[in-house]
Image (cartoon, rainbow, N blue to C red; front, side, top):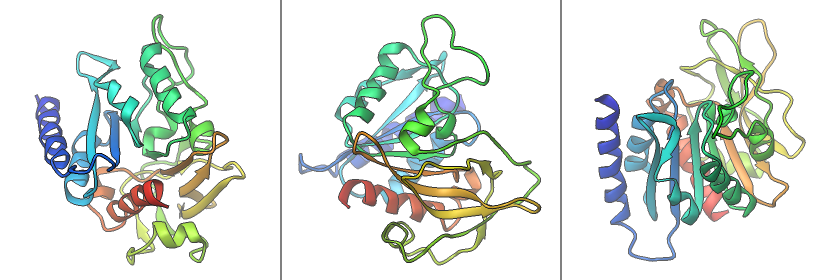
Length: 253
């Protein structure tokens, strides 16, 4: 019932944002949401309603009766920006290939938290009739997710190289740093060479880990990823502005 309410809210939000698209040249942002951990089926439509002002936004969800199938995945075919919040889902080959084609076209991608392990299971192959993409993290985000630190360890988030062009753009207007995150710190080091880190996090007794970065893909497209995405992060002062800046960076810079 809760999922149905969230989907109805998201549909209303999508229609509301879509009414702003009077110019056919405005971008189409597709939010791909399929995870049960962080309530992004609610936080992302709420974010979109408050922060996304340009173009049309569409929401693609997992089928509530079959979590490894998507409802409305054809929206990806006309996307100008794909925002991924998915956790450990394998998909029908046709649906996963649709996402592959989007990436290979060189269009921008944003990943939120569990997107680093979006399309693969933990140490087991997909069931018959479904496909996995275990290289999605390294191919699309230049990442290297392996696990996360204990939930009891509070992560402190701070800037990295604030004078870089990417940092200036992505951290514009964000003054509440350093800050703490509501979620556990992900283990993602080392990143690929083409990645440029703008935020890093630390927990007691361990070295820093990248928390937000840009990545220039081999297909020529650009990506942004952040391991922020806990519901408390969306209610804070950093993630909403960071994500809003990332959307502008992907579409206009």
